[in-house]
Image 1 (cartoon, rainbow, N blue to C red):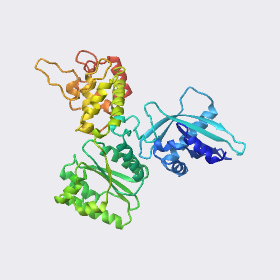
Image 2: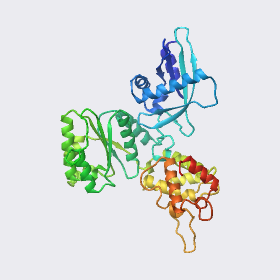
Image 3: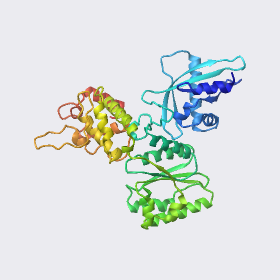
Image 4: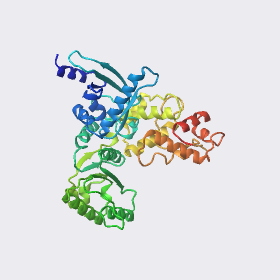
Length: 443
Protein backbone atom coordinates (compact mmCIF):
# COMPACT_ATOMS: atom_id res chain seq x y z
CA UNK A 1 0.00 0.00 0.00
CA UNK A 2 1.19 3.52 -0.75
CA UNK A 3 1.57 6.33 1.76
CA UNK A 4 -1.26 8.18 0.03
CA UNK A 5 -3.57 5.21 0.66
CA UNK A 6 -2.89 5.28 4.41
CA UNK A 7 -3.29 9.05 4.53
CA UNK A 8 -6.66 8.72 2.81
CA UNK A 9 -7.64 5.91 5.17
CA UNK A 10 -6.85 8.06 8.22
CA UNK A 11 -9.14 10.75 6.84
CA UNK A 12 -12.05 8.32 7.13
CA UNK A 13 -11.37 7.36 10.74
CA UNK A 14 -13.67 9.25 13.16
CA UNK A 15 -11.78 11.81 15.23
CA UNK A 16 -8.82 14.12 14.85
CA UNK A 17 -5.35 12.59 14.38
CA UNK A 18 -1.89 14.12 14.10
CA UNK A 19 1.32 12.33 13.06
CA UNK A 20 4.77 13.61 14.07
CA UNK A 21 8.19 12.57 12.79
CA UNK A 22 11.08 12.62 15.27
CA UNK A 23 14.45 13.66 13.79
CA UNK A 24 17.99 12.73 14.81
CA UNK A 25 18.03 15.52 17.42
CA UNK A 26 14.81 14.22 19.01
CA UNK A 27 12.79 17.16 17.68
CA UNK A 28 9.23 16.31 16.68
CA UNK A 29 7.85 17.72 13.42
CA UNK A 30 4.18 17.57 12.47
CA UNK A 31 3.92 15.84 9.10
CA UNK A 32 0.25 14.91 8.87
CA UNK A 33 -3.19 16.00 10.12
CA UNK A 34 -6.32 14.24 8.91
CA UNK A 35 -9.28 16.02 7.34
CA UNK A 36 -11.19 16.31 10.63
CA UNK A 37 -8.97 19.27 11.55
CA UNK A 38 -10.93 21.33 9.02
CA UNK A 39 -14.23 20.31 10.60
CA UNK A 40 -13.05 21.45 14.05
CA UNK A 41 -10.40 24.16 13.63
CA UNK A 42 -11.16 25.36 10.10
CA UNK A 43 -7.68 24.64 8.69
CA UNK A 44 -6.89 22.53 5.65
CA UNK A 45 -4.56 19.69 6.79
CA UNK A 46 -1.61 20.92 4.74
CA UNK A 47 -2.23 24.51 5.89
CA UNK A 48 -2.12 23.44 9.54
CA UNK A 49 1.09 21.44 8.99
CA UNK A 50 2.80 24.41 7.33
CA UNK A 51 1.66 26.76 10.09
CA UNK A 52 3.15 24.41 12.70
CA UNK A 53 6.59 25.13 11.24
CA UNK A 54 6.08 28.89 10.99
CA UNK A 55 8.12 30.54 13.80
CA UNK A 56 6.02 32.58 16.19
CA UNK A 57 2.66 31.53 14.78
CA UNK A 58 -0.17 30.55 17.10
CA UNK A 59 -0.28 27.07 15.61
CA UNK A 60 3.48 26.61 16.05
CA UNK A 61 3.29 27.58 19.73
CA UNK A 62 0.31 25.33 20.45
CA UNK A 63 1.80 22.35 18.61
CA UNK A 64 5.07 22.89 20.53
CA UNK A 65 3.13 22.91 23.82
CA UNK A 66 1.52 19.60 22.84
CA UNK A 67 4.91 18.07 22.02
CA UNK A 68 6.33 19.30 25.34
CA UNK A 69 3.53 17.53 27.19
CA UNK A 70 4.21 14.31 25.29
CA UNK A 71 7.92 14.54 26.12
CA UNK A 72 7.18 15.18 29.80
CA UNK A 73 4.74 12.27 29.95
CA UNK A 74 7.25 9.98 28.25
CA UNK A 75 9.96 10.88 30.78
CA UNK A 76 7.82 10.61 33.90
CA UNK A 77 5.69 7.62 33.01
CA UNK A 78 2.07 7.10 33.97
CA UNK A 79 0.17 9.53 36.17
CA UNK A 80 -3.44 10.13 37.05
CA UNK A 81 -3.48 13.60 35.50
CA UNK A 82 -5.45 13.76 32.22
CA UNK A 83 -3.64 14.98 29.13
CA UNK A 84 -5.24 18.17 27.85
CA UNK A 85 -4.08 20.56 25.13
CA UNK A 86 -5.53 23.73 23.64
CA UNK A 87 -5.80 24.99 20.08
CA UNK A 88 -7.30 28.13 18.55
CA UNK A 89 -9.40 27.68 15.44
CA UNK A 90 -8.88 29.71 12.30
CA UNK A 91 -11.65 32.00 13.55
CA UNK A 92 -9.90 32.36 16.95
CA UNK A 93 -12.31 30.14 18.91
CA UNK A 94 -10.65 28.23 21.76
CA UNK A 95 -10.89 24.42 21.85
CA UNK A 96 -9.62 22.16 24.63
CA UNK A 97 -8.84 18.52 23.82
CA UNK A 98 -8.10 15.38 25.75
CA UNK A 99 -5.36 13.58 23.86
CA UNK A 100 -3.61 10.22 23.78
CA UNK A 101 -0.41 9.32 21.98
CA UNK A 102 1.73 6.40 20.95
CA UNK A 103 5.37 6.41 19.86
CA UNK A 104 6.16 3.83 17.18
CA UNK A 105 8.85 2.93 14.66
CA UNK A 106 8.56 1.83 11.05
CA UNK A 107 10.86 -0.64 9.32
CA UNK A 108 11.48 1.79 6.46
CA UNK A 109 12.36 4.78 8.68
CA UNK A 110 15.41 5.26 10.94
CA UNK A 111 13.63 7.47 13.47
CA UNK A 112 10.38 7.04 15.41
CA UNK A 113 6.98 8.62 14.83
CA UNK A 114 4.32 9.86 17.25
CA UNK A 115 0.62 9.28 16.61
CA UNK A 116 -1.71 11.58 18.55
CA UNK A 117 -5.49 11.32 18.80
CA UNK A 118 -7.48 14.30 20.09
CA UNK A 119 -10.98 14.28 21.56
CA UNK A 120 -12.80 17.54 22.37
CA UNK A 121 -13.37 18.02 26.09
CA UNK A 122 -16.93 17.13 27.13
CA UNK A 123 -19.42 19.74 25.94
CA UNK A 124 -17.28 20.75 22.95
CA UNK A 125 -18.76 18.41 20.34
CA UNK A 126 -17.80 18.90 16.72
CA UNK A 127 -20.43 16.84 14.93
CA UNK A 128 -20.46 16.36 11.17
CA UNK A 129 -18.18 17.64 8.45
CA UNK A 130 -20.15 20.87 8.27
CA UNK A 131 -20.64 21.55 11.97
CA UNK A 132 -19.26 24.90 13.08
CA UNK A 133 -20.46 24.89 16.69
CA UNK A 134 -18.78 27.23 19.11
CA UNK A 135 -17.70 25.12 22.11
CA UNK A 136 -19.46 26.10 25.29
CA UNK A 137 -21.43 28.76 23.39
CA UNK A 138 -24.04 26.85 21.38
CA UNK A 139 -26.72 29.34 22.45
CA UNK A 140 -24.58 32.16 21.03
CA UNK A 141 -25.73 31.56 17.48
CA UNK A 142 -23.11 29.49 15.72
CA UNK A 143 -24.67 26.08 15.75
CA UNK A 144 -24.64 25.27 12.05
CA UNK A 145 -26.80 22.27 11.30
CA UNK A 146 -29.12 24.25 9.03
CA UNK A 147 -28.15 24.52 5.37
CA UNK A 148 -28.20 28.34 5.57
CA UNK A 149 -25.67 28.43 8.40
CA UNK A 150 -23.49 25.77 6.80
CA UNK A 151 -23.28 27.85 3.63
CA UNK A 152 -22.53 30.98 5.66
CA UNK A 153 -19.71 29.38 7.65
CA UNK A 154 -18.15 27.93 4.51
CA UNK A 155 -18.08 31.46 3.11
CA UNK A 156 -16.59 32.82 6.35
CA UNK A 157 -13.79 30.27 6.08
CA UNK A 158 -13.21 31.24 2.46
CA UNK A 159 -12.84 34.97 3.17
CA UNK A 160 -11.47 34.97 6.74
CA UNK A 161 -7.83 35.15 5.63
CA UNK A 162 -8.38 37.29 2.53
CA UNK A 163 -7.51 41.03 2.65
CA UNK A 164 -11.06 42.06 1.77
CA UNK A 165 -13.59 44.21 3.60
CA UNK A 166 -16.56 42.33 5.07
CA UNK A 167 -20.14 43.46 5.62
CA UNK A 168 -22.20 41.38 8.07
CA UNK A 169 -25.87 41.89 7.22
CA UNK A 170 -29.10 40.62 8.71
CA UNK A 171 -31.90 41.42 11.13
CA UNK A 172 -31.13 42.65 14.63
CA UNK A 173 -29.81 40.06 17.11
CA UNK A 174 -28.82 37.44 14.54
CA UNK A 175 -25.17 37.32 15.67
CA UNK A 176 -23.54 39.76 13.24
CA UNK A 177 -21.31 41.47 15.81
CA UNK A 178 -20.33 38.19 17.48
CA UNK A 179 -19.21 36.66 14.18
CA UNK A 180 -17.41 39.85 13.16
CA UNK A 181 -15.54 39.81 16.47
CA UNK A 182 -14.33 36.28 15.73
CA UNK A 183 -12.83 37.49 12.46
CA UNK A 184 -11.35 40.55 14.22
CA UNK A 185 -9.75 38.30 16.84
CA UNK A 186 -8.25 36.14 14.10
CA UNK A 187 -6.75 39.27 12.53
CA UNK A 188 -5.22 40.27 15.88
CA UNK A 189 -3.69 36.82 16.28
CA UNK A 190 -2.02 37.32 12.90
CA UNK A 191 -0.40 40.51 14.19
CA UNK A 192 -2.84 43.18 13.01
CA UNK A 193 -3.91 46.02 15.23
CA UNK A 194 -7.60 45.54 16.07
CA UNK A 195 -10.10 48.30 16.90
CA UNK A 196 -13.87 48.32 17.42
CA UNK A 197 -16.41 51.14 17.16
CA UNK A 198 -19.94 50.40 18.36
CA UNK A 199 -21.95 53.20 16.77
CA UNK A 200 -25.18 51.93 18.34
CA UNK A 201 -24.00 53.03 21.78
CA UNK A 202 -21.67 55.88 20.77
CA UNK A 203 -22.99 59.46 20.94
CA UNK A 204 -22.24 61.60 17.89
CA UNK A 205 -19.77 63.69 19.90
CA UNK A 206 -17.81 60.55 20.82
CA UNK A 207 -18.06 59.33 17.22
CA UNK A 208 -16.55 62.60 16.02
CA UNK A 209 -13.72 62.28 18.54
CA UNK A 210 -12.72 58.70 17.67
CA UNK A 211 -12.90 59.38 13.91
CA UNK A 212 -10.75 62.49 14.26
CA UNK A 213 -8.34 60.62 16.50
CA UNK A 214 -7.97 57.76 14.03
CA UNK A 215 -7.65 60.03 11.00
CA UNK A 216 -5.06 62.25 12.70
CA UNK A 217 -7.32 65.29 12.89
CA UNK A 218 -7.80 65.38 16.67
CA UNK A 219 -5.61 66.79 19.42
CA UNK A 220 -4.33 63.25 20.12
CA UNK A 221 -4.06 60.94 17.12
CA UNK A 222 -3.75 57.17 17.10
CA UNK A 223 -0.22 56.04 16.24
CA UNK A 224 -0.49 53.47 13.46
CA UNK A 225 2.81 52.34 11.97
CA UNK A 226 2.47 52.21 8.23
CA UNK A 227 3.75 48.64 7.96
CA UNK A 228 1.34 47.20 10.54
CA UNK A 229 -2.07 46.02 9.27
CA UNK A 230 -5.19 47.42 10.87
CA UNK A 231 -8.55 45.66 11.26
CA UNK A 232 -11.40 48.00 12.20
CA UNK A 233 -14.78 46.61 13.29
CA UNK A 234 -17.60 49.16 12.84
CA UNK A 235 -20.83 48.03 14.49
CA UNK A 236 -23.83 49.45 12.58
CA UNK A 237 -21.86 51.39 10.00
CA UNK A 238 -25.09 52.99 8.72
CA UNK A 239 -25.02 55.25 11.80
CA UNK A 240 -21.73 56.89 10.78
CA UNK A 241 -22.47 60.56 10.07
CA UNK A 242 -21.93 61.87 6.55
CA UNK A 243 -19.08 64.10 7.74
CA UNK A 244 -17.33 61.16 9.37
CA UNK A 245 -17.97 58.99 6.31
CA UNK A 246 -16.03 61.54 4.25
CA UNK A 247 -13.18 61.67 6.78
CA UNK A 248 -12.95 57.88 6.93
CA UNK A 249 -12.95 57.59 3.13
CA UNK A 250 -10.14 60.13 2.73
CA UNK A 251 -8.10 58.38 5.42
CA UNK A 252 -8.62 54.93 3.84
CA UNK A 253 -7.50 56.28 0.45
CA UNK A 254 -4.39 57.80 2.01
CA UNK A 255 -3.50 54.49 3.69
CA UNK A 256 -4.08 52.61 0.46
CA UNK A 257 -1.83 55.00 -1.46
CA UNK A 258 0.84 54.54 1.23
CA UNK A 259 0.63 50.74 0.89
CA UNK A 260 -0.78 50.25 4.39
CA UNK A 261 -3.12 47.27 4.84
CA UNK A 262 -6.47 48.22 6.36
CA UNK A 263 -9.45 45.90 6.68
CA UNK A 264 -12.96 47.09 7.53
CA UNK A 265 -15.38 44.65 9.20
CA UNK A 266 -18.79 46.32 9.27
CA UNK A 267 -22.21 45.24 10.52
CA UNK A 268 -25.61 46.64 9.64
CA UNK A 269 -29.26 45.82 10.21
CA UNK A 270 -30.30 48.35 7.54
CA UNK A 271 -30.19 48.35 3.75
CA UNK A 272 -27.24 50.56 2.88
CA UNK A 273 -28.51 50.80 -0.69
CA UNK A 274 -31.68 52.52 0.56
CA UNK A 275 -29.65 54.85 2.74
CA UNK A 276 -27.51 55.72 -0.28
CA UNK A 277 -30.66 56.60 -2.27
CA UNK A 278 -31.86 58.75 0.63
CA UNK A 279 -28.52 60.56 0.75
CA UNK A 280 -27.68 59.22 4.22
CA UNK A 281 -24.79 56.98 3.21
CA UNK A 282 -21.90 57.78 0.91
CA UNK A 283 -21.91 55.84 -2.35
CA UNK A 284 -18.19 56.62 -2.68
CA UNK A 285 -17.45 54.98 0.67
CA UNK A 286 -19.71 52.02 -0.10
CA UNK A 287 -18.09 51.28 -3.44
CA UNK A 288 -14.58 52.02 -2.21
CA UNK A 289 -14.97 49.37 0.43
CA UNK A 290 -16.52 46.93 -2.09
CA UNK A 291 -17.80 45.01 0.88
CA UNK A 292 -18.00 41.21 0.68
CA UNK A 293 -21.44 40.44 2.11
CA UNK A 294 -22.16 37.81 4.76
CA UNK A 295 -25.91 37.49 5.36
CA UNK A 296 -26.92 36.03 8.72
CA UNK A 297 -30.36 34.36 8.53
CA UNK A 298 -33.11 35.05 11.09
CA UNK A 299 -33.66 32.45 13.77
CA UNK A 300 -37.03 31.48 12.25
CA UNK A 301 -35.18 30.06 9.22
CA UNK A 302 -32.89 27.86 11.33
CA UNK A 303 -35.15 25.02 12.50
CA UNK A 304 -32.34 22.44 12.56
CA UNK A 305 -30.25 24.80 14.68
CA UNK A 306 -33.08 25.62 17.07
CA UNK A 307 -33.33 22.00 18.21
CA UNK A 308 -29.69 22.05 19.31
CA UNK A 309 -29.84 25.57 20.71
CA UNK A 310 -32.76 24.72 23.00
CA UNK A 311 -31.35 21.36 24.09
CA UNK A 312 -27.91 22.74 24.87
CA UNK A 313 -29.20 25.89 26.57
CA UNK A 314 -31.46 23.87 28.86
CA UNK A 315 -28.72 21.35 29.66
CA UNK A 316 -26.11 24.01 30.46
CA UNK A 317 -28.46 26.26 32.43
CA UNK A 318 -29.79 23.36 34.52
CA UNK A 319 -26.23 22.27 35.33
CA UNK A 320 -25.09 25.75 36.35
CA UNK A 321 -28.14 26.41 38.51
CA UNK A 322 -28.12 22.87 39.96
CA UNK A 323 -31.67 22.12 38.81
CA UNK A 324 -31.01 18.50 37.93
CA UNK A 325 -31.88 17.06 34.54
CA UNK A 326 -34.49 18.98 32.57
CA UNK A 327 -36.06 17.11 29.64
CA UNK A 328 -37.49 18.96 26.66
CA UNK A 329 -40.73 17.16 25.63
CA UNK A 330 -41.39 16.67 21.91
CA UNK A 331 -44.50 18.85 22.01
CA UNK A 332 -42.47 21.69 23.57
CA UNK A 333 -39.82 21.40 20.86
CA UNK A 334 -42.54 21.60 18.22
CA UNK A 335 -43.77 24.86 19.76
CA UNK A 336 -40.20 26.20 19.62
CA UNK A 337 -39.93 25.34 15.93
CA UNK A 338 -43.34 26.81 15.11
CA UNK A 339 -42.68 30.15 16.85
CA UNK A 340 -41.79 33.17 14.68
CA UNK A 341 -38.83 34.42 16.85
CA UNK A 342 -39.21 37.93 15.46
CA UNK A 343 -36.73 39.21 18.07
CA UNK A 344 -34.16 36.57 17.12
CA UNK A 345 -31.62 35.92 19.89
CA UNK A 346 -32.78 38.74 22.14
CA UNK A 347 -36.20 37.12 22.24
CA UNK A 348 -34.78 33.59 22.41
CA UNK A 349 -32.70 34.32 25.49
CA UNK A 350 -35.54 36.08 27.28
CA UNK A 351 -37.93 33.22 26.52
CA UNK A 352 -35.41 30.64 27.71
CA UNK A 353 -34.76 32.54 30.92
CA UNK A 354 -38.48 32.93 31.59
CA UNK A 355 -39.16 29.29 30.76
CA UNK A 356 -36.40 28.09 33.06
CA UNK A 357 -37.99 29.85 36.02
CA UNK A 358 -41.25 28.04 35.24
CA UNK A 359 -39.74 24.56 34.90
CA UNK A 360 -39.14 23.14 38.39
CA UNK A 361 -40.37 19.57 37.87
CA UNK A 362 -37.79 17.96 35.59
CA UNK A 363 -39.67 18.88 32.40
CA UNK A 364 -38.84 22.03 30.47
CA UNK A 365 -41.93 24.21 30.07
CA UNK A 366 -41.91 26.80 27.28
CA UNK A 367 -43.23 30.25 28.27
CA UNK A 368 -43.24 32.32 25.10
CA UNK A 369 -44.84 35.43 26.56
CA UNK A 370 -44.84 37.16 29.91
CA UNK A 371 -47.93 35.90 31.78
CA UNK A 372 -50.48 38.50 32.81
CA UNK A 373 -50.43 38.79 36.59
CA UNK A 374 -53.51 39.42 38.68
CA UNK A 375 -53.33 41.85 41.61
CA UNK A 376 -52.96 39.00 44.10
CA UNK A 377 -50.53 36.95 42.03
CA UNK A 378 -47.04 36.81 43.42
CA UNK A 379 -44.14 36.61 40.99
CA UNK A 380 -41.16 34.33 41.41
CA UNK A 381 -38.87 35.97 44.01
CA UNK A 382 -36.05 36.38 41.50
CA UNK A 383 -38.14 37.44 38.51
CA UNK A 384 -37.66 41.18 39.05
CA UNK A 385 -33.90 40.66 38.90
CA UNK A 386 -34.12 38.68 35.68
CA UNK A 387 -36.51 41.07 33.87
CA UNK A 388 -33.75 43.06 32.17
CA UNK A 389 -31.16 40.29 32.24
CA UNK A 390 -29.70 38.88 28.99
CA UNK A 391 -30.58 42.04 27.09
CA UNK A 392 -27.93 43.31 24.72
CA UNK A 393 -24.79 41.44 23.74
CA UNK A 394 -24.48 37.67 23.58
CA UNK A 395 -22.14 36.35 26.27
CA UNK A 396 -20.35 33.07 26.98
CA UNK A 397 -22.45 31.02 29.40
CA UNK A 398 -20.10 31.29 32.41
CA UNK A 399 -19.87 35.07 31.97
CA UNK A 400 -23.64 35.33 31.66
CA UNK A 401 -24.14 33.45 34.93
CA UNK A 402 -21.34 35.34 36.68
CA UNK A 403 -23.07 38.66 35.89
CA UNK A 404 -26.47 37.31 36.91
CA UNK A 405 -25.25 36.01 40.26
CA UNK A 406 -23.42 39.27 40.93
CA UNK A 407 -26.67 41.11 40.27
CA UNK A 408 -28.54 38.85 42.71
CA UNK A 409 -25.87 39.44 45.38
CA UNK A 410 -26.15 43.21 44.93
CA UNK A 411 -29.89 42.85 45.38
CA UNK A 412 -29.38 41.04 48.70
CA UNK A 413 -26.40 43.11 49.90
CA UNK A 414 -24.20 39.99 49.53
CA UNK A 415 -26.42 38.00 51.90
CA UNK A 416 -26.63 34.31 50.99
CA UNK A 417 -28.58 32.72 53.84
CA UNK A 418 -32.06 33.52 55.18
CA UNK A 419 -35.45 34.35 53.73
CA UNK A 420 -34.09 37.47 52.07
CA UNK A 421 -30.82 35.87 50.99
CA UNK A 422 -29.56 35.13 47.48
CA UNK A 423 -30.01 31.37 47.85
CA UNK A 424 -33.72 31.85 48.60
CA UNK A 425 -34.19 34.12 45.59
CA UNK A 426 -32.52 31.57 43.33
CA UNK A 427 -34.28 28.54 44.81
CA UNK A 428 -30.93 26.92 45.63
CA UNK A 429 -29.25 25.49 48.69
CA UNK A 430 -26.87 28.05 50.22
CA UNK A 431 -23.97 25.58 50.04
CA UNK A 432 -24.68 24.95 46.36
CA UNK A 433 -24.74 28.68 45.68
CA UNK A 434 -21.43 29.17 47.52
CA UNK A 435 -19.91 26.42 45.36
CA UNK A 436 -21.14 28.14 42.18
CA UNK A 437 -19.78 31.50 43.34
CA UNK A 438 -16.38 29.97 44.02
CA UNK A 439 -16.33 28.23 40.65
CA UNK A 440 -17.12 31.51 38.84
CA UNK A 441 -14.56 33.49 40.87
CA UNK A 442 -17.14 35.67 42.64
CA UNK A 443 -16.07 36.88 46.08
